[in-house]
Length: 364
Image (cartoon, rainbow, N blue to C red):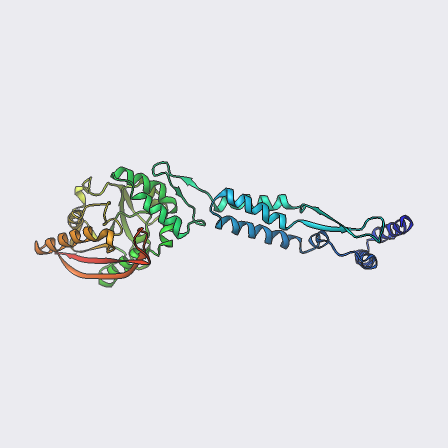
């Protein structure tokens, strides 16, 4: 055996020195076949398939990470998964008649797999601790419906307006991605409603976006030809994201319902729109009178509200206020659209989709 090994070694050395890689591979495979030794996983991964192999492992672990409930569970399962990708090499003992010895050892590039997962964790799975509400605000990749539902329900625990502002400050970074999970259609519905009735110069019209948030409504109106926007919101973090969008000519932090709108805004705007804030726990229905004051005569006021069970009492008060203002001759109703699939329900006693309503009035 030692003599055979020595001869084989010199053959391989001679082939290598001549840089004949094809001959070396052919000889190596022939020797394997002659000794009836199966190709090991290492032989396979050292070839061209190695990058693909480890990339598949890394992608699988990243997917597992995203679906895991907690980092501890992910760590436990990932160790189990890595153990399934151990490299098995069969080596015969000196006595060729005996059973081959199966020797297990970790994959040599397992460290790279861990680095892959840790990097993905840093980029895609960042968690922010919300000190005010005591809940986690999830990143865009991890925002499942259940996570978003938990975030929104946590806001209901805040009773004061300042607490709600703090909640929205912490939620701002992930707000757009989270409401997308809810299939939140109000910004698009409001923009389409305004567009269907507005017949003036859209590029020159000035729009007051009340409770503008990150700018979802302005984004939709921009697509429909409107070009000038002024936004107000109670959350500075939301306003900062709206500012980064580049859509607004002016942005102000105002606590709607607690602080008056600037006196110089009276009869100033061609369109006033408020989406999302007209609901229980946000702003009082009487705020719509201030919105009417800021609108030019002949201008449009678009409002939205939810029609689900938790908001029925608020919607009743809002409808009463809108009718009272119409009776006073302040405006006239152009359209009220009831929408069945407004957004996905997050209330603990509701399932499926909740309904909502879009109102459009014209100031007299």
